[in-house]
Amino acid sequence: MANVLTYKDYIGSVEYSHEDRCFFGKIEFINDLITFEATTVDDLEKNFQETVDDYILTCKQLGRKPQKQFTGIFNIRPGIELHMAAARKAMEVGVSLNAYIKSLIAKDTHVSTN
View 1 (cartoon, rainbow, N blue to C red):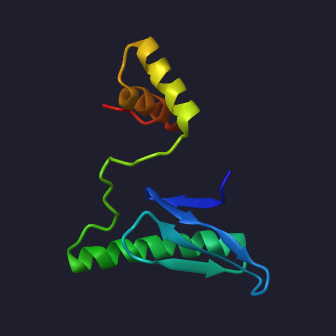
View 2: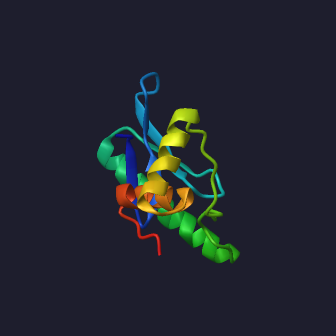
View 3: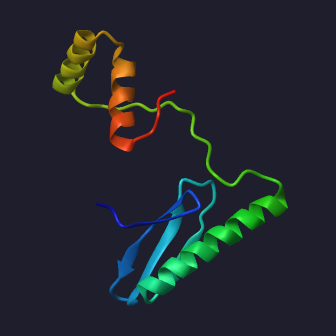
């Protein structure tokens, strides 16, 4: 499992610099590069939350939406064998390949496809 922090529907990556002896990260899935750091886990969580709050406030002051917009479209390259197996399974259950893959992602992430 990846090291991440979550707060107000934002996700922050977490890494550690042995050289600097500190934790650091950035807010993921936004249009801007917003980073945070700390020397303890408790301070990292606090700094991440403060960074998110500051980011939201700054976006509000600038009159723009804070989170990156997703198009709902992405391409994958599963290879020939997985592509064929998925297409066959989709046909067996009577749905399109797209609907089949969407259902698998929804099941794994617990997000509705409606």
